[in-house]
View 1 (cartoon, rainbow, N blue to C red):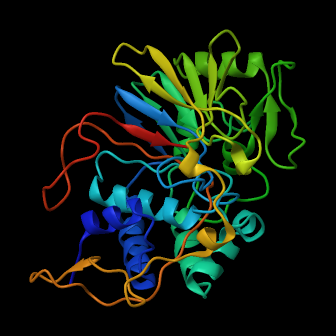
View 2 (view 1 turned 30 degrees about the vertical axis):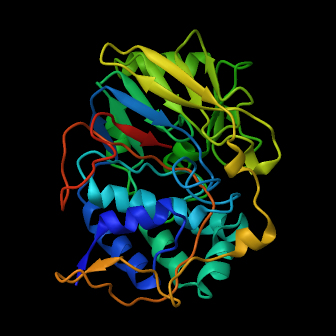
Length: 342
């Protein structure tokens, strides 16, 4: 049987969970694809940058934890990566780890929606393969968290062994955990307990050393949806409105044009994305216990699988690049832009 990614994506947009067997196959195929990617992926503008989603709904976010739809969120991102492999990049964040997802909701959500730990294992194993950063037009450095005192050049990121659980300390941890501090100039110990805070001189030195002009990152809640610091040398993009269904914050998506111009599209939570009732939050949508239309055996028949589940959002990234690719033809939802999820 052939995996029908278009049918999977359509089902996920309807908030229908994929079968456990489908999740397993998608994760295995995505790992094979990610194996060939560098720790630093180079892309060209135009780019649409999407920050933390945290599983608040299907199409934006910090992939998992603290939302009610993390499983659906990470499921659709992996499907899109497979469907548009040359246009989608998934970048790792601090929530793409076993330790964090065990505590902040993803593990529990997988158990509730699938009744087993297997789906959690499939996705957390996949997280070990995600790239660590993206560079746009050799001028804009994109990372989930921030900078590291151990990293001075992009080449030093390229030699990190990323295929593992995020360590408690070291350069890999710093990239996903660190935060800018407008009140400082240098590095300082982070109150998060991992990574560092860093100031204006650190940013200026990193950009000068690597001949770049801007840093894009996510990781921190911004009540106005975004924040620009250090004389326009660093931007934070936050794409989860009304974070945790109670913060009341705005969110944004950043568009970068071919000339490097940047425009923040700010939005608030839609009514349908407010916190659902307990009954809706626990509902799984299947046909006779099996999601329909997920496989195509050449005769239009649906394959049989087990039940599926959902996750909350964590930190990661996704990029759609121009030009059509993938299978089966049909409507291409990412024909003209590149999307990047942190």
